[in-house]
Length: 262
Image (cartoon, rainbow, N blue to C red; front, side, top):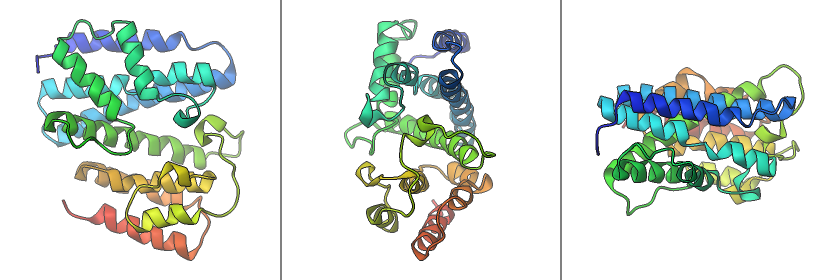
């Protein structure tokens, strides 16, 4: 991997800020959702830098990781503009769209070809259900960092939303799911098997909250688990789920997962 100068990373951040500004139209609802994704991007950049430090990643690796975070959701802005949703299965794979946008705009042309392809692959894997088994270890390591950093800030977004003062619902955050009572048994079953909740089992907002809790089974680093516990993310989601024996059992399984030793 060639060295990436800090100045090159700063240039990319400037491009990103300018690119996002094109999607701010003055429409209150639209701009609010664009701003949510823009702020999420900057937060994931910070999260991945903190994780890099915790893992003793060298400066070049930290810069590379931050670039993957900077562009991991660059497809979200065009996705929302075209389709009015952030739900990939109802629109387009935002990771793939983001890679297309980076290539079309020649955003990474100042980097060497190997670094460009590496960044594209990490972005491609950030939202897959599972990482590929035939990828090289370095790419998998950076992919795991990005996936952890991404989750840490998504948990911030959704827990702040669930605990907001009474206000308008945001279908972009809720992915248009109905806020109906109860939970889907298959979603409960996934979590009791210590697995992520499969997308086909998400039928209402409660199931979506269970899916967000189940992400702890796809967390890769002790630093991330410590931050989840410190920020009380799981407790804040549990607070907005129905109180039932099944939910209490899930809470216990989640707690065990967060307290396990590497």
